Every structure is written in structure tokens, then in C-alpha cells.
View 1 (cartoon, rainbow, N blue to C red):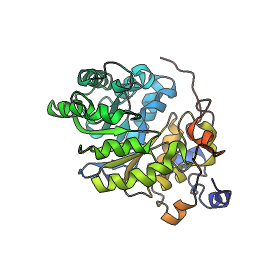
View 2 (cartoon, rainbow, N blue to C red):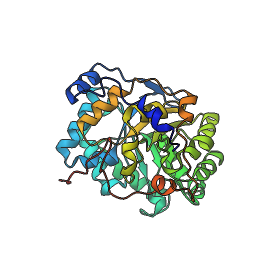
View 3 (cartoon, rainbow, N blue to C red):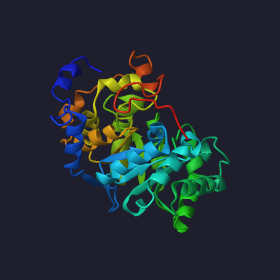
View 4 (tube, rainbow, N blue to C red):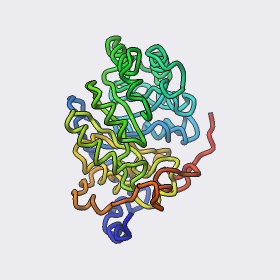
Length: 334
């Protein structure tokens, strides 16, 4: 990022509530009504903060996962996401158990990855993933089911006769999902190929990151307008950089993460990795901060070309959960 950004940071770090004690932040969260945004061309309204299943696993136990999910639910968060492949299914189990008795009031998403080497790369393989996810999440349907992390020739896997789109359409016919989408981390060109293939996608999950992680700026410049044109809901992620780039976490804060992501009207929710109740409070309290203007957003420039010294930091990482909003890597307890 430009060095001038450091001065800008000084003017944007946290409100008085976020700078206060955990008790003060918790109180602020309880007095916050989380904004909601329309889910693309559909009428569903999603809270601008969503809870990610990958990081939920790092709470360390079902008991602690329950505490995080219940706090998020009680404060009004209604978007929860997961994936078939997260932590060998335990992430989905944690979330499913935690949402018992609450399912009808949340928008629940998961992803299938059988076209990425996790099983049979066919319609049947995808449907197997769906059944596993439904069982683990303890529900008879998902609100959103997404093809996970498209890369390389995954557009072909989406559009082939027994591919991802065929699975999505079959699942809709069976009443097991409401909407279908796809996610991607690193290649906006594949996003373009998937979108321009002609299918009417409901949503995509992609990096919208104030720190520029994982080609975020390219997604913002190329994919975001495409989504607007096709009325595809955008779910943001990697605001802090993601679990594998904890060295980026200290460069920002939750208020800045949300203000940046929500500066794009197409972003209806931003998924935040949360493994601690205090972080739920911080995210909710920050959710009412005004989105950045385009001018403010433009100050967060990054150089993500492969020969840039910033490239490795934005694309790769080392240890998990060392610092930042989702800072601790707990010892996992089954």
C-alpha cells in the first residue's frame, strides 16, 4: 500500500465504542441495529456482517462455537456460511449444532468442492456433497449453495452436462437449495468465464479486501461491474487477508474492513472470520459505520503484480491466527 495510507489510518481507526473496553464494546453491540442489504436481484435481506464457518472451527470446541454463533444470532446477524471441505466436515457440524432451533431465522450457505478433487467430479459427486452438508448442518435445505473456489478450467466443469450447474438446478428442483452461486479467491478471469457462460447465477463470493489480499483489486475492478450488470449478489471476504495471511491483520481493523467492503453497493454482506465472542461484538458495533466514499477507498492502493514486493504478502501466508481480529489459533478440542 502507499505509505500515505498510514496517515489516513489514523483518522479511521475505530469509534469511541470500539476503542473502549470489551464491556463497552459489548454494550455498544447490543445497542446496534445491524444494517441489511438486498441479496442481489432477490428480496432476501442479509445483514452486512456474516459469520464464516472456516474460522468458527478455531474456537476449539462445540461449546465455544455455540457461544460465538449464539452471540451473533442474538445480536441480529443472519448470514452464516460454510463449506463441505472445511476441517473435514467438523466446521459444518459445529455450525449445525449451534444453529439448532434458530435455522428458520438465518440465511445459510455452504459450498461443494467435488470438482476440485474432493470426490467424483460429476453431478452425482456434487449431490453427495450436498447431502453431507445438509446432514452436518442439520437442515433440510440451504439458502445458498456454491461451487467452491473456481480456478483453471472450472468454467467448463460448471457448464458441462453433468457439472455444477446441473447439480444446482437438480437441487433447486428437489427443494434442497434456494439459490446457486460460485466462489473464487485468485483469478478474476475465471469469474468472468463463469459469469459470461450464460447461466443466471444468484451470487458470488470473492475477495473485497481493504488490505488487497488475493487479487482483491482485480476482482473489484473487473468482476464487480459484471456482477452489477447481471444482478449477481456479491458476498465479500478476506477483509483482514484471510486465515493464511495473519501478517496482514494488524494493518487494519474491523471498522475499516467493513467500511471498505460496503463502499460497493453490490456487496450485500461481508464474511468475517470470528473465533471469539469479543470479535462478534466488535463486528456488530462497527457495522453501522458509514461506507467509504470512492475517494476514501482510492487511497488504499496496492501493487499486486507478481514482481511487486507486496505480492507475496498479499497472496501467501504462514502461521494461522497470530494477530488481528481473528487472532488466536486455539488448541482444537473435539
